[in-house]
Length: 281
Ligand SMILES: NC(=O)c1ccc[n+]([C@@H]2O[C@H](COP(=O)([O-])OP(=O)(O)OC[C@H]3O[C@@H](n4cnc5c(N)ncnc54)[C@H](O)[C@@H]3O)[C@@H](O)[C@H]2O)c1
Image (tube, rainbow, N blue to C red; front, top):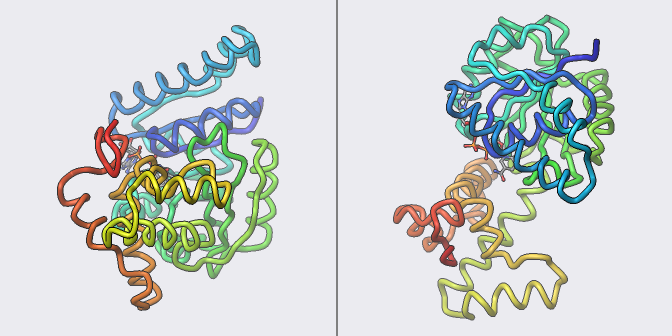
């Protein structure tokens, strides 16, 4: 019997993580708060795998077996057998701290509790458990089945053993794990988000049109997507939340979110998911 990976949250990231874990041969238990979110996550996995079948990268039988390794539940107690639980719920400190305290109660005492947070302190999540040495950041990129990187973040108390086990899991999932310390935005968002924010300032100040800003970065810097299109893809609410974490965390005005970003979020123009952001979809 293969080992079990627990995933909490069946949204954009959670179902992607469940898919790659099942693909690597693990049994997966995916937990969300309501059946409809689990069903939506399973439909997204089905669609993603069907594309692989259509392109001849996966057989129908492999797809069926892979999906059969993913069990869905609303019961947090079902995560008790997992050797690692990867949390991918809403980016909200209160939601995540409450969840980590509960996971500490229901999982085996030697299980690793990993968070896919984009910006919340791993050290703070560890502090609400009795096993801060086994709490770690495992930051996958979107879309999970496609993107190679997993940023692995050590909290203040994370042990080397936890780090090594987590790195080994990322390897088994076919990802490239790269290490960093717990610091606001880690590395990925500390470097990416100020660039996106600066592109929004350039638009706000009328330095160039959205097409020119994105075109300059694509053609001049070889970026596959321009920063404004990328912001729409990530979600403008998510971009604003991360800029606020950088601003609060470092107390440095260079991280202040652009007023235009705030205005778009206030208007509900959150990017691709809402049909409108810096572009219309
Ligand atoms: N979307 C991205 O591009 C991206 C990239 C990297 C990291 N992240 C991070 O991944 C995490 C999840 O983001 P997402 O985009 O998948 O969000 P999402 O909104 O698509 O999904 C979140 C899911 O968590 C569920 N949930 C909320 N509270 C829960 C609880 N207590 N127990 C179980 N399920 C619960 C929600 O019902 C929802 O289905 C966040 O921390 C985010 O910062 C997102």
